[in-house]
Image 1: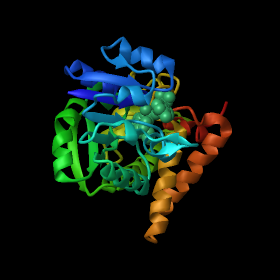
Image 2: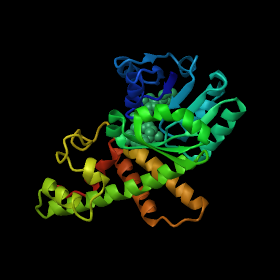
Image 3: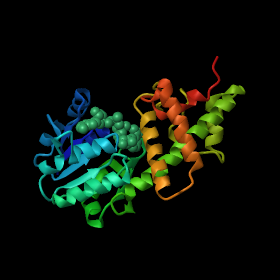
Image 4: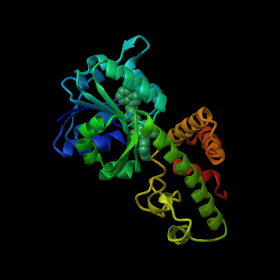
Length: 298
Ligand code: NAD
C-alpha cells in the first residue's frame, strides 16, 4: 500500500519505520531534516513537502504535536492551502496525534466534503511501544474506515479499540492521559519519599510494582534515573513524552471536563503541577522528570 506519513518525531518516526519494514511503500515528511534522515535510513522515501508526500497515497497518516498543527496541515493556515485539496479522492486519513475531539470532527467533516475518509486514532504505549510495534490505538470513526485502517494499525500496534464516532478516540485518549499524568506524579511522590528516608529506589520500586501501588510507570516508565535501563529517566529524560505534551493533554482534559461540568480535581491539580514544572524550564524534558520537583535537593 502507498502511504504518506506526516510528522516523524519521537512517535511518528518509529511508526513509519514499522510500516516500511512490513513492506509498505512509505513516503514521509517532517519539517525537521534530522527526522527525515532517520526514516530514510530505515527504508522510507522522503518528500520535500506534505503536498509531495501525499501524491498517489491511498492512506495518509499524521502524527503531529497538537490541534493547531493538525488543523493547519489539513485545512490550511495563514493563507496557505490545506492538504485535503492535494489528496486523491477515496483515500483514508488516519490522524494519530492527540488533539481536541472537536478538531478531529472539524477536519473529518472537511475531509468528507472532499471525498476522503477520516479516523482519529490516537495511541498509548510510549516511544517503547512505538518502536516495538505494540501501541494501543483508540479509534473514532465508522466501522468501514476502521476496517480499512486495521491492517496498517496492526503493523504499528497490538491493541485496537473502536471507541465510537469521530472524536471518540480522542476522548478516550485524554481520559487515559489524565490518569497517566496523575499516576506519574503519585509514583514520583512515593519514590521521592522512600529515597528521602534512605530506601534504595530500585528496591522500593520493585516492592511497589508487586504490591497494591503497582502501575504502568512502575512497570515500564520509572521516573527515577537508573532504576530501568530503557526508561526516559535513565536517558536524562530525553526521547520520551515531553512535559509540554502532557501539559497539552491535561489542558484538553480540563476543557472536556468543563464542557460537560465534570469534576476532575486531581486532573486539574496535575495540570497545575506540570505547568509549574514547564515554567521552571522542563517543558522539553520527558514528563517523568516531574519527580525533580519532589526530590530532596542536596
Ligand atoms: P514530537 O514533538 O517528538 O514530534 C512531532 C513532530 O512533528 C516533529 O518532528 C515536528 O518537526 C513535526 N511537525 C510539526 N509540525 C509539522 C508540520 N506542519 N508538518 C510536518 N511535520 C511537522 O512529538 P511526539 O512525541 O512524536 O508526539 C506526537 C503526538 O503523539 C502528540 O500529539 C503526542 O501528544 C502524542 N503521543 C506521544 C507519546 C510519546 O510518548 N511521545 C505517546 C502517545 C501519544
